[in-house]
Length: 251
Length: 330
Image (tube, rainbow over all chains, first blue to last red; front, top):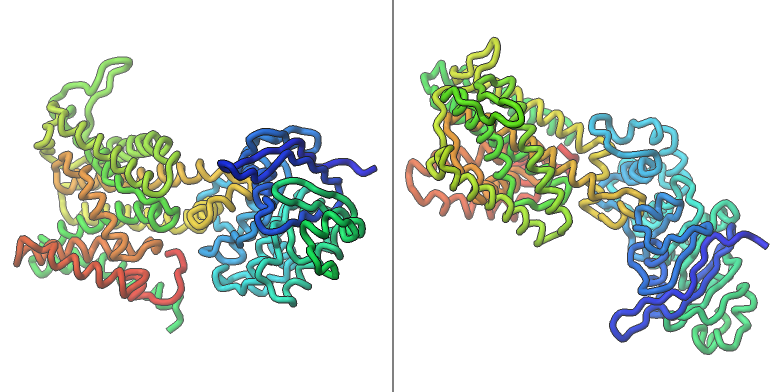
């Protein structure tokens, strides 16, 4: 049995009367692509934000590589190897594509209190910039300001930045959101190519993508993990069908 | 025209004008312009340092004048003790006053930086509107502290009988003083340009755009913003030290929030986030103040609409009008 990379136990988070996360348990195995699905408002992003340290749970614990990280801050978790992309594109639109990537590269190589040399000329950037951009097909856009990229390219940049420094756990929060079908195929290919080398928690609405990529699927409803199993079993499960997939189970 | 060429062309023209201005002024017997433009250069240093906060790191500080004032008072207080031949303090070690520019000017920069570190450490725990208000509050606290400091003149301020001394230079000579300011402005601009394009610079610029993403990359943005705040405070301290020398007078007015506001206007007028823009902004602001004030004491009435016009129609201020094209960080 594969090693558990991330374990969540009895997680609870409420906003007033609304329980966004209820007594949630989850195990993510190393090397898996673990999909997280659920209807709108099921608490997917709330859960992701608790895993990355953007917000803190009311109770419950989170373990990463058997180490408790429940109270670690976002930047501390990032240093442990948990990288994320955001549901709403979070790139630095005032910087160029190359500078965006350089920031991600520099973040992985010590401190950034270098005041003099151009950011694109440091050793680690020169060594890693080209292939980091090539990995997400953006090498021809390097000098362009990130705000001028197309929507799909912004998502590619965002995933590319999360991949820099070879994180062990990559959390992708709806990477396909708002993308055309061409972009979806491109990004699916990219995610598939990462399979095995990095553990991925994939929050995604597009069922085709989920069922073709995932090793495990967790169904979240009202902040609860109602079912976790292989994609095949999830597709066939009655409870999941009524709760989430609804009538049209041909997805 | 190639935008990059246009940019360097404009910068070169401005640099040449500033370099020959005092010679031309002397030749035409208008020495008065030398001291007016010395003031422009000094305010430009302060405005560029503020642009590091407003234009590059997204920290809207309304207390920047405090660091100008502190820099000026360091020069003023050391001069006072030197003139009175009375040590500044005796415990735990004796510190004498000084008129030596090699001591007091770096010291002014250092003390401003230390104050920026203290104020920044506390202020940067807040964001947005709260940050604006807390920087304003700190600056006003320092302002009232100096108002009540009777030993150093209180509200009336301190007069210096002469400018600081520097080996090989006579700062009492307006021409030499002007060129000192010009060289320091050029050095500061060069440093600031390198800074915003450095590793540190992209962290700070990225953080102003999206702080959460910076933290998600594993960078604690707080310390980067703090260091940027300290660098900007040090730049303002340098401007303050020069200003004390230029006017041979320091007063709490240098710390008043209205000066912070004027510096902010210079940055906006010249072009937010452009570094060279605030130099233009400082020049236009002070020249308009000077010449409009000759005709009317209500000169602000004319400056106001002009500022509104520039801010609405020129997105990157006067710098944008001259250089045009995409924002390229100085």
